[in-house]
Structure formats: structure tokens, C-alpha cells
Length: 381
Ligand code: NAD
Ligand code: ZN
Ligand code: ZN
Image (cartoon, rainbow, N blue to C red; front, side, top):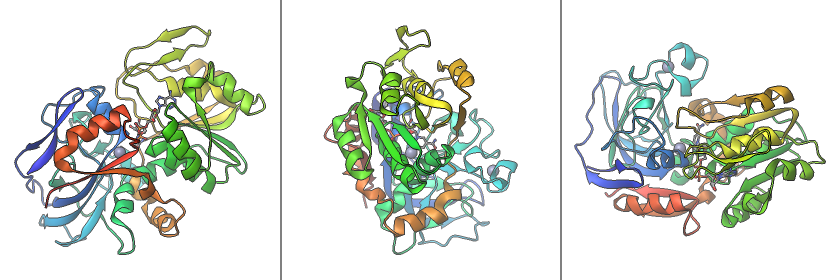
């Protein structure tokens, strides 16, 4: 089959690899119908995630048709069209029984990050991903959800990650009525978080990014005020000024580690250039939240070391919350929001390309060229 394989930093290739097979009676094999490229994939692509092995198959956002099921699988039928949460999870361990599906304790024992994900290096279990023609789905009775007939396939594929992650970003911010919410990052995750902030009663939503086309999108898609950080000298001062010098009630980091190591403003006001993996957005989030405010982190930090102004967070009494999204927990209510037209996820999709063109697609998304926000890959059939 054709699959997106990792070669080296800044290079993936659509290559012929062996088809996946059932390895366990709980597995299913799914023929992929749509797969997306995510900002999380860019951390792999930029070589920032440890133990990303050459030849491994990327992709954790996919829909597909069940092709084959293992002997223990009861809840799925061959032919079902399913969306598959990006988390790999057992459904029964101590984490899963608390609906912390992103922190499952029963993923491959070689996983060093707690929690499994498709196509996300051996730190997340070494599972092959879905940017391919076929994918093996472990714990197949637990994860996959049959796509309701009235849900568009492009909304379904965004329900595997973007919608629940954006929602959980806002939820972890514990937004109260009329709160001012600042979202760092106008990628699909930040844009969805901004939309969800309104659902939770925000009085004001401000989105920060460096690309005008994305900020323009944020104004339209999320009715947000916007700030281009390239035009601002000191982000914390700027945001304080915008919020009557109090700071934001809630700051959301929808950026994570950065490939280019931006300027980071330290506590003493000295600017220093950190290596790739800098946590600039998280600095800004901590420094622009009000005293006693909340910082919600869904941005992924691949490198094991990231400098974070934790003293500043402590002195201000901030609450920091962070996690992998627990996709399955959110699906029932998010399907209702999508059905009612309150989230409109598929408007985020700017590019639809054949799987064969995955290398160009990664390049375009990484370089933020051609107005790219979200790319959907379509496998050959
Ligand atoms: P994306 O690459 O499309 O968007 C990231 C945006 O952040 C870009 O537009 C970039 O210009 C902007 N940016 C860079 N530095 C910034 C800064 N200092 N301040 C403000 N904006 C800045 O990515 P995406 O698909 O939207 O994903 C965003 C993040 O969410 C990634 O780190 C991804 O790994 C993470 N993520 C987490 C989960 C989870 O479960 N926690 C799930 C999906 C994605
Ligand atoms: Zn993703
Ligand atoms: Zn589990």
C-alpha cells in the first residue's frame, strides 16, 4: 500500500510499504478514506520529537471503512465507515475509566510519553498512522465511532482531533461568563479553541499569530480580535494594554514547540534566542494572563527541555492545565454542536490533495504557503 513515511527532518515520502495485518484479536484493519495533516505532524517533520524512526508511518487524524476485524471485536462490522480518535487507548485502565483517554496506561510498553497516538513516534507507542491506504486500529471495540449519516466526512475527520482539542483547550481554561480569552496560534487548533471560547461564555476573544491570512481567517471564522506578533514590540505589555492593564482571564497555548526558535523574553526583560523547540507562546501566555488567571496548554512540546517562566506563573497564582485531548469523551456533545452548525469545522480545510502528493503538502503547510490552514489527504482508490 501507499503510505506517508518519514525520511529525515523536512522530508516525508509517499512510499510503497507492506499492508498492515491483524496482530491481536482486538484489532481492526481500516481502509482510509480521508486523513489530515496536523500541526502535531509538523513537530515530527521538523525533527523535534525524540525517537521518530525513519520509515515510520505518520497520521493520527483519519476516517475509514472497516475492512477486517479480529476475533474479539464485537462493536464494529466490516463496511462500517468510522472516525478514529487520534488517541490509542484501551478503555479499561485507571486513566481510561476516568475518561482520560489521552493518558491510557495500556499502550505499548516502549512508549515513554504516557498515552498513545497513531503515527506519532515511538514515544507515543510506535503505532503506524493513517496517512496511508490502510491502518491497523488496536482496541477496535473502543476507539472507532461510526460516522452518523448526517455528518459530512470532512467534519468527521476533524472530529478525530481538531474539534475535540480546540474544545478541550477552551474547557481547560475554565472560561467564565464575560471572560477575556487570548488564544496564541491561529492554526486549526487555535481557531477552533477561539470558536469554542464563545460557546463557553467568553466576552472577548483575541487571537495572536504572525500570518495575516490566518488572522484574517480568525476574524471571520471566530469573530476574534487579532494581534500580529510581528508588529508588536512586547506581547505581554501589548495584551495588558488591550485588557485595561489587568491581563487576560484565560490564555490558551495552541502553538507548542517551534522549529525556528523565536525570540523569548525572559523575566528580567533580556531577549535571548533559544534553540529549536522554544516555548515563546507559553512565555507570552504566562506573562499576559491576569493575576489568578488560567493558562491552558494544548500545544505539543516535543523536545524534553523547554524553558518556562514557572516562577512568574507561581507568583501570579496562575492555574496551568494541559493535556492531550481525550477525544472520545467529547464526541457525543461535539457531534451535536457540529450538527447544529455551531462549530463548522470543515471551513478550516483549504487543501485537498492525493496521498501521492504528501511531500509537497507537508512543505506547503510547514511554510504556511498558499493560504494553507488544513490539508486533507485522499488515498487512491
Ligand atoms: P499550525 O502549525 O497550523 O498552527 C500553529 C500556529 O502558531 C501558526 O499559525 C504559527 O504562526 C503560530 N505561532 C507560532 N509561534 C507563535 C507564537 N509565539 N505566538 C502565537 N502564535 C504563534 O498547528 P495546529 O494544527 O493548529 O496545532 C497547534 C498546536 O496544537 C501544535 O503544537 C499541535 O502539536 C498541538 N496539538 C495538540 C493536541 C492535543 O491533544 N493536545 C492535538 C492536536 C494538536
Ligand atoms: Zn492532530
Ligand atoms: Zn487505558
